[in-house]
Amino acid sequence: MRFPHLLLLLLSVASLGAAQLEIAKIAEIAEIAEIANMAEGFENAVFRIEDAKSRVSIASVKLSVGDLAAVDGQLVGDYSIRVPLMESKNDHGRIVLPLHVSIAELGEKGGTLTGQSISHKKDTTPNKIVCQVIPQKDQTILLAITTDRRTIEFTSRYEVLTSRRAANFTP
Image (tube, rainbow, N blue to C red):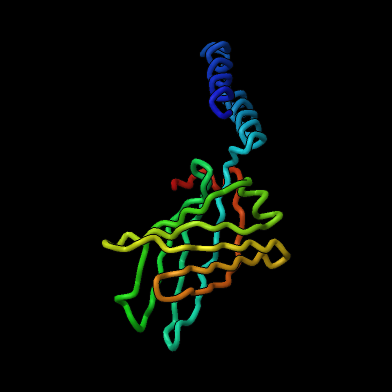
């Protein structure tokens, strides 16, 4: 678990004494804690998806997904949908996908995640979202969002950002 490593880190820092604690030693201890957490699946990583477009009849539909992070066993992040010809159909909300592997493993080996897109609009029901990750050289991701009226399919690319590149992410 993550907490025993943090406790060990705090005890190590306390036992060193304030006079002996150097900046280099703090960095070394933090790096050891980060490696230990990653070994247990508590990686500091986010899943980034490029903006995508689709069509519904004559209307263009644009999907933007914010960085997705692992939170309590789920891949979570924000989305927005823009429909320039019908702005009343614009939407934004939260994507929640159950995550059964680490983000790094999902990015490397691929897989299919099925979850929900939850709109911030009043009086809406969550929509089903299926996310298929295809880890070839192009790192393709297929997203299918099923609403009450239709399924809209998007094809995009993804990238997994790990370690310090993802450290500033807040889900």
